Amino acid sequence: MDSWTIALLGDGGVGRKALAVQFTLNCFVETYDPLLEVGYRKQLTVDNKMCVVNVLETGGQEEYGRDPEERGFILVYSITSRSTFDRLEVFRQLMLQGRRKPIFTLVGNMCDEFTDREVSEEEGAALARSFGCTFLETSAKTGHNVEHLFTSMIRDLRSTRLSDAAPMTMPKPKSKKCCIF
Image (tube, rainbow, N blue to C red; front, side, top):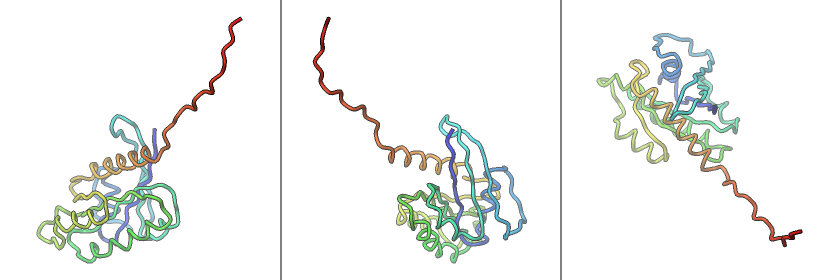
């Protein structure tokens, strides 16, 4: 069984904690303490292989920049807030420091709020292309694309780990003369 740590990054109010709760507990919480640092954990099967996912969500994202551990990073913005979208590069740059190849996914959350949209789906997809990462729109409230978000991230992390692994080769035996008695 493999284990992964996925950190949710983004401005306050974008739904980081709501995404973590929806993924791990399958529910939506209307109110929460924004100062409370919480980690969430879920065991699941992705592509017929069991894994444990540790989901980190906190208001103080800067501490993620100091830990070089292999992690997936979900950059979250609210489709109802242009300013949260505009600040994503700050979080991305912070996570690039000291890491070989961090894995990112860009997420436009609150896609259930169509009437208040300030960031188009096309803008989100374009930013993801410029970051070289995948893009999804989610709703922590309805659960839309939440499970897909995390399973896709696990697949990306697994494929990176496999591609980084050095191929195992057997050394060639030295030629020896064979003696028969």
